[in-house]
Length: 431
Image (cartoon, rainbow, N blue to C red):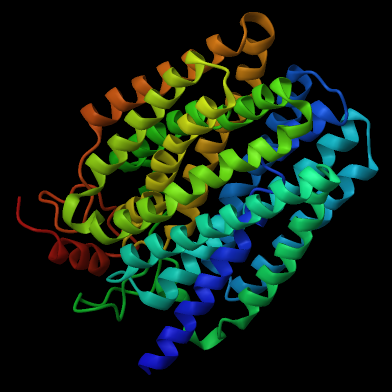
């Protein structure tokens, strides 16, 4: 049995590694491709990226609800990987704004399946007790995959041009589909995967029925966390594309390669950060770790304007590894804390991802506008200020949500019936 568990764990590792380059589609390479190959200005680039992100926003909550309800999670993830890849491979074949935007709209809508899908598979396989460590491991392999793909992209783009990024995504997509389908169907508990608490550890069994959706809207900590993640993504989303554009303007021939160096540097830092967060989130608590991510993000935005030197920009980009590494490993943990026992773990992730998608979409559009009107430095300082405001609000209003916190006011009770409410009350310490 233990050997079988290790085998499934390794397949989850492979899934996260190969899915890394597929989840975000072209990501920051899109800005460089449109700037250097299509000769678009920053405002049009920002508009395309914003439209794509808005499409992802509309798909996030339905995607989470689908993963909660579906018992074919692996199939949906494989189909999404194929959809993202097909849309990205079509981009070199089109030139006009509407068609370029359409390819990215499809890619981002399909990509909304991945985050709740991976989290659901992980929770359904390991359960709540081992979830923190599994999430940290997921993120570590995801970042290792990103670093590897970025290295390959940088080297191949140097010799053959930016178009090689498209073929790399296709190869990674095929590998991610194989890894997804290699996970045994019987290894996944679909009820635990959606956040129901039956048969998990020593906790009392709860009814296998989800609570009402209104419980999500009345949970104050969940709403506060959603606001904090919106501000994090509003401040963070535009930073790397802006850095890529600055690097491309400094040296057009090395723009894609230098972007790959930025991504590799950050991803290498994210690997140990994610592992550390996964191993210590239960003892350190969620709140101080997430506050550190916001603080590092604000510092990063303030440091970029100091110099246009490529070595400086790449060095500052290392801080992205700290902030993003923390966020990736902590986000599903906090949502799991807040929705434990409700059966709405994945739709809650999707709902918050919808809100954060709004912040990310606005980030690239607003930042592009600021660059056109006031320059890159003004854009970076604006993003840093948003992160600092988010830090202040989060520190003042967000409670600790780890399972041993007292009072454990973060969890949403399962209100589907009276017995479910008694189950949750039994788990909570006396106030």
